[in-house]
Length: 308
Ligand code: NDP
Ligand code: OXD
Image (cartoon, rainbow, N blue to C red):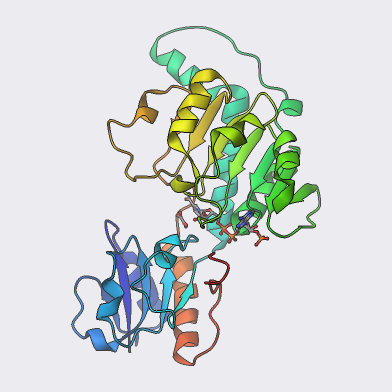
């Protein structure tokens, strides 16, 4: 029995080392160097080539190398009998919380504007945006969304959340699916931490931006496909949104000629909001590998029915 690590443009040797430190008897292959495809029963995948899994006849489970699983759910070449899991680690949650807090603080304190002014040697002061105009609305109150919400509450922000099921979390006003208009009308800073599903694709559009409480801004760390990119440009150019902070994009890396690069009000980070730590990941992967061998349910198993 072997474990396969598969990711394009990512070095997986440190993850392999961590796995072997936990169990030196493991047999771990890094794609594309796989000698015995029929021995692979468990795979860990990120940005994998489409349809590759049909080459592994005895595969019975795949773990994403991150929290998102849209890359696995969208691959029709993965048989429905194969169990899917995702990685949720403490550092992934805390990094995401800090990433969003940093974006919120940068918005309030005009950090990107001052960075631009420094480049121009231009001295000009801007008023800090009062907290009362910084009500944060988090779309998706799952593992990432709740972690973000808790840190923002600790920092005295007013926090609203929107999710399919109602949540009871101290300090958060929870809105459910059909209450989206109420949720948006109470929100200045919109944070997208939804999974990418048929229902959430393209959800961040002009109609939605117009329903936000003014002044408003967008932070997207979910997936690029949540956002209708031309609507964001229109919203920024017409002042419907005062700024946007984006970590994820329809096409990654973001092409050099993309219109977002030239917009000073759009901040871009290269999909780094929260990055899976190999040591933490190895523990969860090993546990799920063992579970898959004995036919048990996996940790953080993904529901194909829910689509996330
Ligand atoms: P979870 O699956 O834990 O949470 C998803 C949340 O979204 C849940 O609260 C769920 O509601 C809600 N939800 C799902 N569908 C809908 C819908 N149609 N309408 C309203 N709410 C909905 O996801 P995570 O928190 O782990 O991840 C969130 C996103 O962050 C993902 O897109 C992931 O890929 C991305 N991510 C990005 C990273 C980065 O570095 N940029 C790093 C890690 C994650 P309910 O609670 O009722 O089920
Ligand atoms: C993830 C990500 O889903 O990095 O973990 O986007």
